[in-house]
Length: 130
Image 1 (tube, rainbow, N blue to C red):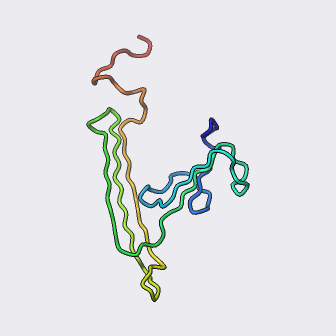
Image 2: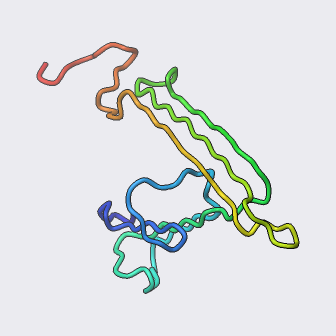
Image 3: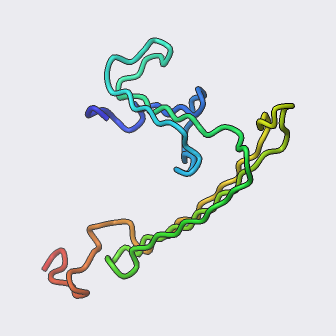
């Protein structure tokens, strides 16, 4: 971000700094990207901030499944499958959920994640050193 190194961008989920894989899109309520004028609460950041607010407790039971693939579109064969479930655990006297659960997961698979290995029309045109 902003021409900085990859480790110069900080990620926050519900106000807590995290590293590594982030949460699935189905669990995001708000996403904020800060690229300049970073507030002092974030410390010494040279790249930027990506701040994610997750969804709160659900008032009703729900679930979903998503699937994507590029198997027939390119040589990389990128595929993913995601599932999510949510629902209330406890409600107050007005019937509003005050405690709930959210479960989600994602499986990703790709045959080749390096574009340099892609072939045109399934055949190799030239090899390094030819």
